[in-house]
Image (cartoon, rainbow, N blue to C red; front, side, top):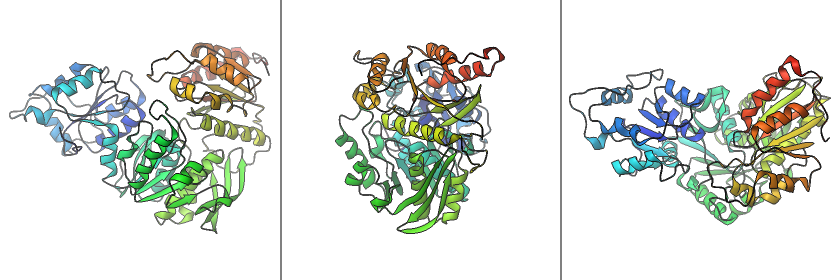
Length: 530
């Protein structure tokens, strides 16, 4: 079995191609006119987009999906044509049947199989790939191979990876550097989570969740923070620190946020940034204004003021993310004016304080926050919006991802949270119990397992009870249907409603918005518990 990824025309098969990380990798390969196959048990706009690019996607994860590779007389000519660039990126899905006079040997036809940590050894496709002798790679192996082809910028950290990497990618795009992009969220600027450019740079989100971060090394490594998460993989903080140290040692330059004491003490970045001027970082800020529609700050580079930074994103955590982009931009010799213009125009990433609409005087926001630290800073940003909403100035354009207009005063922050994974909920129970202070009302639903077995030691109702020991208004609803029904009864004009979590909670948002958009709910805004 080869130990290197082959980009010379051999097909790829992704088990679970619709995932946010897997689909980004598949997108890059399809854009490079390599033959891409994959499977996913759920159809989505992501899989549909990949199919439109020419990927052949199976709607189930069955061993029979590999029959196409076991048959000697098949579509190898089509694959070779794709690999040589004879079919455009607008091509239809590859045909299943084709006949050629001299098919290659079976070993040459077997695909390179890409899987993530989520794929169980008993998965039918995984088992048949082993039986056939297919080269099998973890998604991080493919990412590492792509990173090695460019002057890459890999963004790691427990929190903020997606926003920070997207900000940097947007900055390079606006600067005319035509980057290749692989991020863990969807950005309208490049219509998805990936983009193939023709410039020398690749910007990638580098995930630490399963320890595969140790496989990555980049021209520039960025670390936003280090905090214990993913207790299903890491037994303690020391193990996590060791993973980040290996990553840092494999990067040419490390840009790091010294606001994080763990990062400051153990990583010692080459270039530092901080939103706290007292820490004497290479890049810092002062005169910070947190507004209802963004942030303004004066930026300093090694003690010298270099200009004003404006961003459409909310909160101190996003100011920190933007400062990381400044540090990387300056390292690449970009003028600060170019950097600042790009950051000011960046509209944000989907599911990161993503504004979904205003219906019945209620503002709906979707956010991926699923760790106590993420919840805390997201709710702090929402509380800041509430405090500033009545005196809003038109600082930014109407393109802001979280628009609010004069007269749209916010009176209450409502947090709807779906816990993610039993292991995280149990390990961080005390932190979860104390992170909802900036919400006026908290609603919880049952834990989203994300494939974990239920150990029977923790559930959503128990977490709600612990939060209620620190918060006066906590409501538990056991299912998404119950959440939807309850919200339709208790929400009222002036509410800013945040749907928080990495699971499927956001599926209820359109239905709740539709209820408040309809004509038959006038007057149904009772005050419940607050």
